[in-house]
Structures are given as C-alpha cells and as structure tokens.
Amino acid sequence: MEQLEKREHDFSAKLRQESVISALKDYVSWQRELRAGREDTVFPVHGPVSINLDLTTACNFSCPHCVDSRLLNTGDYLDLETVRKSIDTLEKNGLKSVIIIGGGEPTIHKNFQEIVRFIKHRGLQVGIATNGSRLEKVAEVARELSGKDWVRLSLDAARESTFFKAHRPRGRTPLSGILEGASRIKDLNPEVQLGYSFVVVWEGIEVNGYELAANVDEMELAVKNAQEHGFDYVSFKPCLVRLEGTMRESLFDPPDPQREERVIEQIRRNLASAQAAASGRVRILKSVNLEAMLDKRVHDLKVQPETCHSQYFRTVLAPSGIFHCPALRGVEHARLADASGYRGRANFEFTHACLEHSIRSYNARVGCNTVVCFYHQVNWWIERFIASGEPVESIPVVGDDNFFL
Ligand SMILES: C[S@@+](CC[C@H](N)C(=O)[O-])C[C@H]1O[C@@H](n2cnc3c(N)ncnc32)[C@H](O)[C@@H]1O
Image (cartoon, rainbow, N blue to C red; front, top):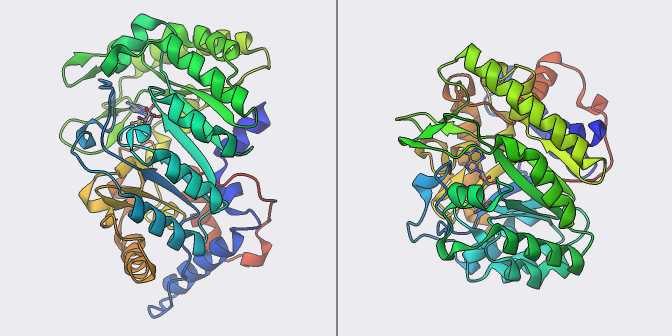
C-alpha cells in the first residue's frame, strides 16, 4: 500500500518512464547549456506529457470552498474544434495523458462524450474529475476507458447534510444518487479506477466570511460508502484556502502552531479509523500536501527552486488560456497563450516560445512562496540533477505505467 501511495506522487519516476525520458534528458541538457552561458542554445521541442483540460467554466454546484470560484460561470468554454486540434497537435509532440477537470464541471460541456472518445482514440490516458451530477454521460463512455484511466468524484462528504452544505448542488442532486451512479460505471467497466475525492475541512475555516461545514469526522464513513459502491480508492486532501487579495493558495497562513497541532491530531485520528475501515479493499490516498501536513513539513513545500521545471512537462488548457501551473490557472502572470495556443503547429511553436520565456524568467522561489507545491519534490530533483553535472545517460529509466502529472 505504502509503495502504491509513493508511486502515485513520485513525479520524477513518471518523467523517467521509457516514453518520456528523452524529453527529460533534452530539458536537463538545455538547462545545463544555458547555465554554462550558451544563450543561443535551442529550446528542445517537446510538448507537455500531461495536460489539465478545463472544458468549461460552467458549474451546476456552488461549493463555498471552491478554489476556482472566481473562474466560474463566465460563459466561456473550449469549442470542440479547438479541443480536437489541440489534442492532435500535442499528441504529435509527446502528450500522453489528459486530465479533464475544471474550473467548471466538465460533464456539462455539450461535447463531453465526444471529447473523451477523441482522447481515447488518440491512445492517451484520461482522468475525469467530476462532481458526479451527470454520471450518465460518463456511463456512455465508460466502456471506452482502460485500466490506467480514472473517474474521480469530488464528494467531500459522507452524509447527505454535509454533502449539501459542501456543494449546494443545483437541482438538489443527492449523494445517494451519485453513489448509485458511480456503482453503475464500475459495473459497466470494472477496469476503470473509480475515486472518491474528499477535501478535508476542519472547524473554523472561513472563506469570504462564510464558515465551511467541517467533515473531518466523516472520513471513515466515506471509506465505507466507497466500499459499498465499488470505488477503488478514497483520496484525502486538505482544504486549500486562497489568501485574500492574491491568487495564491495557502495552508495555515499566517502560521498558527497550536491550531495546526490540534487540526493535525484530529485528521490523524480520523485517518487511522478510515484506514482501519478500508481493511485493504479500498486504497487510501493522501495528497502531497496532506502528507506534508501530517509530517509537519507544510512550510518546507513553500520553498521552491528559482526555476519551475515542471512547466516543461505539464500545463493547463482552459477557456481563458494556457497556464503553466494548475495552481495558477486563470492567473494572468502564469498565462502562456490564449486558448488557441495549441491549435496547430504554428500556434504550438509560438506557445512553446512563450514557455521558454516563462521557464527562463518566472522565479518560483518568489512567485510561489505561499504555494504548498505539489511539484516541489520533482522540481528539486531536476534542479539537483542539473547542478550535479552527472551524465543524463545515468538517469535510471523505468517502464511505462501512468503519465498523469
Ligand atoms: C474545482 S473542481 C472542478 C472539477 C469538477 N467540477 C469537480 O467537482 O471535480 C476541481 C478539483 O478542485 C478541488 N478543489 C476545489 N476546491 C478545493 C479546495 N478549497 N481545496 C482543495 N481542493 C479543492 C476539487 O475537490 C476537485 O477535485
């Protein structure tokens, strides 16, 4: 189990997979040339290995905790042709996986099923994050998904009353109905990895003056729900809160060690009960930042190397443009191009030049010093490897498995 969890988050291992290692080697060599003062060195042409694809800003839930609330319901969406042409261009340049997520609720997009099919016909891995309100659309494409693909439901509760407070669903979709729909997807295709996503909310979190409904004591019940309805895993992550007046996210900011201690203890206790309830039948995943919280390393993850190397390997394609980080979607200074930036070779080349500029000029040590970065470990791993001067041929290669970054 421990091994599985480690692999899930070990992004450096993902970049060392047979099918992507050449991008990693070329990138490291380019960085070394740059640092040796060879300014004219050519930026290697590889597209992202993985993208977050935000199909639409429309959402039929209004979750008070939503990190993307400022991006929602603007009327913007990605049109089918842009999605097709972008995936086509990216696939020719090394794309291996697509995470269909948001912003908004992807299943609201009128071409959702067609887009999933298109991605699968291109041989790419696909992950779908959904609020579960339109699982009949996911069911239509369920049989086309394969073993590495996943459907993850953002449920964040185990009881109906908490579910309503956490999501304020339009049409009053009940949790029980969503769980039934999830079971059907697993019946249609047992290979699909079905996830129960749970943002852990503790007492006293306020967002825009609104106190969130705590759910920390429902972690065990969530595992039981997951087991009853055929889920493969429950994924716990701490609730992120955006700092007032900035576009960044922060945990425990400003630091409050006593409160931190109490909250961590409470999560630890509930996690232990959840793990006991899982009894090996459902995997329990902890997000990078939850693990850091429990190990009291949250503040370490806010210290980034100057260069964010991860932007070379994964980006976000959203209606409002292409962004160099999922934590900075919609943030102007993180925008590489507009939404047509991967539509065809010429646009891709222009966006790639913008990416080069971003990698060379964006200072993550300063720009991301309040972000508990999911890519902290891989950024430092690449940074240290560049500095080590060790030959790129010495990077250990691993077999292809999962390309979600
Ligand atoms: C904004 S939702 C959009 C996609 C889709 N509508 C859904 O419900 O999954 C994307 C992801 O952001 C996560 N998320 C939203 N607000 C969060 C917060 N405050 N802290 C941690 N994760 C959050 C959700 O749990 C979900 O997995």
